[in-house]
Amino acid sequence: MKITFVILGVCLYFCFTIELMADDSERRARWHASFQSAQPLGREITEITPESPLGVSGLKVGDIIIGINNEVVRDGNHWWDLTNSLRAETKYLITYKRNNKVDSTTVVFKPEPKESYEDLNVEYGFITSDFGIKQRLITTLPNDVASNLSAIFVVGGLSCSSMEYLPGRTSKFIRGLRDLAQQSGMLMMRIEKPGVGDSEGRCSDTDFVTELNGYEVALQLLLTDKRIDPEKVIIYGNSMGAALAPYLANKYGLNGVISDGPFYRSWFEHMLEIERRIQAMNGHDQTEVNRRLIEAYIPLYYGMLIEKKSYQDMIDENPLLGNYNYHSSHHMYGRPMAFYHQMQDFNFAGEWSKLTMPTRVRWGSNDWIMSEYDIDMIEQALTENGNKDIEILKVSGLDHWFAIHESALDSYQGKPGEWDDATSKTLVTWAKEINK
Image (cartoon, rainbow, N blue to C red; front, top):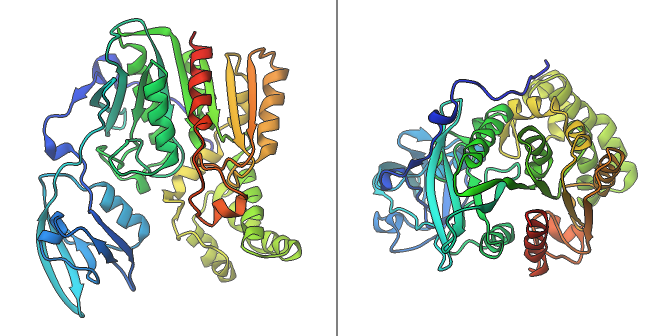
C-alpha cells in the first residue's frame, strides 16, 4: 500500500486560527503518584502524595487501579492513554482492588500549573487539525519585543511525551528546549501530539499521517503570525522530528533546519540496525545476535513494515516469533501499527537530498537509537545537492536524550547521565547563526 502525504484542504487559514483555553476543564491533570504494572491487569500504587486528590480520596500504596470511568486498564499503552487524558475539574470514577476486594471512589483533579518565565510571555492555545483533533499549542516569546521576531518551530520525537515544561520535570531534553526558549530571543512554538498534554485524542491510536498533519497546520499558523518575520523561521527537530524537519522545511520554504539525532534510511533499515545493537547490549554474542536477526527480527520487521501486518498477525502465522517479540501485539514504542506502516512509505532520504537551506545536524557518540552512518549519509546527500551551509557536530558521550554518559550501554540501561550546558548553548548558537 502506497501512502500519499498531503495536508487536507478542509481547513485553511480561517479554520485554524488559534483558540485560547476557555477554562480549567481543558487543562491537563496528574496523578501525583507512582505506579507499577499489576497482574493480570491494572496499575499498583507504589508511591502517593498524601495531600493529592488520590490520597485525599483514600487510595493507598498497594492499591491496584483496575478501571477509570468504567474503562478497564488493559495494558501499558492503554494506561498511558488514560493518564495523558486526565483533565482537571472533571469527575473520575476510580475502580481499585485492595486485599482482593474491589471498591471505587470519585476523584476530581486540580489543574497543573502552566509554564511561566520572568523574561518570556507564554501563550497557550489550540489548533484543530484537518482530522478534527484539537491540539495544544505552547508559544513563548520575549517580553520586550512585539514585532519582526525570528521564530523556531519545534517537532518532537516518536514517543507520546509532552513538550511542556512542568515544575519538577527532570527531562534533559525539556531542559534544552527551555534554554532555547529563554536564550534565543525568538518566538518558539511547540505542539502537543494528539492525546498528549491538553490535546484531544489518544496517542496510541494516532497514525503517522494524522500526526504529520497536526505539525503542518500549526506551522501554517505560525507563518501567518504578524509578530514574526516569515523569512526567519527555522525548524528544530529531535529524533523522529529531526527526520521530519527537512520535509517541513522544504515544503514551507523555511530559513533553516536544526536536527538532533536524526535518521536517513527507511524505518525498516533503521529497525534492523537498532535491533542488532539492542541484542548485543542485552548480552548476546555476535553469533547469537546474527541468529536472532535472521530467524526472528528480519521476519518480524519485514512482515510488520513491508507487508503491513501487526506483530500479532506474524505470531499467529509463526508462533515461535512470539518468543522474540518484546513489543505488544499491535503497538511498538506506544504507537500503533498504522503509524509505522505509513512511516515506512515516507521518503526521508529524498527530503534530506533536496534540502538547500542552512542545516545543522548533531549526533552523540552514545546515541544507541540512531546510527552515525545515517549522519554521514545526510552529510553526503547535502553536499552532493550543493548545500553550502552545513555543520555536522558529533558530540562525545552525548546520548539520544541530551544526557552525557560513559557508554551507550549506560544510556540503554536507563542511568540518568549528566547535563552539559553546551548541549543547549549549541542550539542557541545555531539558531542565532541561521536567523541572523
